[in-house]
Length: 394
Image (cartoon, rainbow, N blue to C red):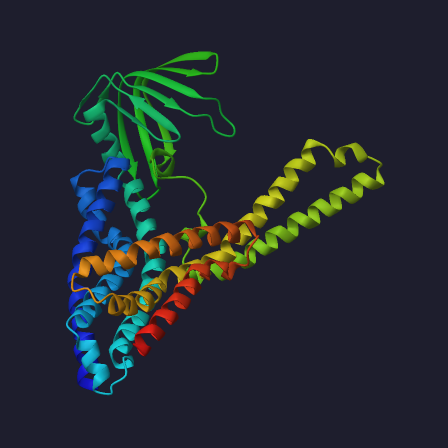
């Protein structure tokens, strides 16, 4: 029995390692191309990007290749009547399926870690790389298309000579305490400071327009903006999906405190308005804005509470896929591994991922408890149980 178990484990590992290597390479190429296209990365940044894309590539490749390995190995065993021979020898099919279950369980734990690594290290590192390379990215764009823009500013130039931008038109978006600004100058240069995380734009002989005012500034003048505002990938609020698992409990506790503070402020404000007889304000637009703030804070809390369950559910797709795929391949008894794989994979896609999407959406809104994201996994486990019983009986 141990020989049989080792044999099945070796076959599973052989198919898994070969297929995961090929699929991971494919996902790396797709991920690098996506980042390079959306952010205008050069060859140097693309090369530096490779290790940061790897966890996300493995995150998508491991579940599919685990199912592929199970369908391939058990489909071949069943088609060559090896499963029948094992059962005729008085050996339980458990000896065949146990290695697949153990391997899938271990890979599920690795997948949870990869999910966490991809969002907490991979995405953050990609964002940091793009932000720190904003000077080179901007120059590349300006040389190729004569324009570059981010969420906060844009540049259009006549041409680029080395580091000099000839006849640039620079527009800065309005901030909290300043008007939109347009600068026309003879030439300009850009210089990034990674220590202070700023981008300095030096303009020579400029016309500066702010609102209705237009001013002539002779000589060289500098404008300093944060690197994250100059980058296309900077800014924005950190999403719960990009927070490491170890940080989620503290973030959740802080969000609970914020909600309590909002409620207390609203209660105190309502009490003063009622005591003062200012009942019209209680139904005014200011209270609508405060209620919206409270609703947004509660929605954020639901997302924070749901996120650990979602990552563990995503990670254990490896085990759930094998619980369905291995007995299904034995029952199908088809030597063509692609037939077995796609016959199992497409129903899983049609069942698991829609249920996961519904569970995530409802958990975010608070309609479902956070553990509701496990609905798709539970359905696959139930289906796998009945398929395994069928293999046991026949």
